[in-house]
Image 1 (cartoon, one colour):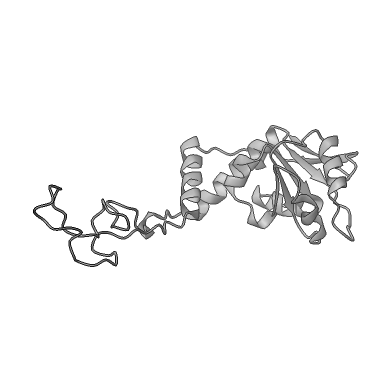
Image 2 (spheres, rainbow, N blue to C red):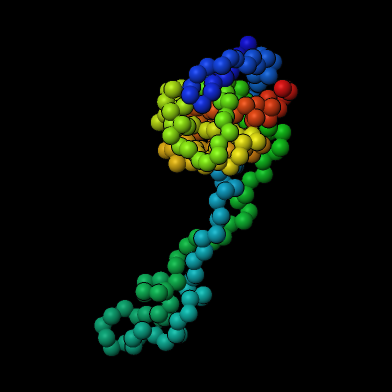
Length: 212
């Protein structure tokens, strides 16, 4: 049975939360995880790059020079690709058909598998977040240093905390935050350490298929 250690903002350990083994038993192929991550990244691309061809650029149809008598190669139009301001050959065009559909059950299974793996490795920590009247980055840095995760790529999963709490995190290098309801597999795959606030614990266990 895996355990999540609970800490206060000073890094002092306050206790442990047990996570049942059946919530961490996930059988999922690495190819399924890869397919989900690739689809997720491709769907964030705009695919909006657009270039004009020879027939689309706004140029005169006059020849740049006489066809005969100059000793140079014949040229038909200033809109040809070899001239400045001419059309682009085989340039990128918008590609709306390259978006990938991600199955909802597959998405949940991948997030479940990645999160279970982080818990088994002891990379998930529980934080009793204090009430903040104004944003303070220094206590958050001290907390991360106490847990020896400062400098690592860290992800904070928040719940009902006020806006002052995530604002206190955003200036720390290599540290990101997201509401537990908006958690996605790409953020999980990148994170080396995960910190879950106490108010987000119920949502975390819901992702694992359990309850508080």
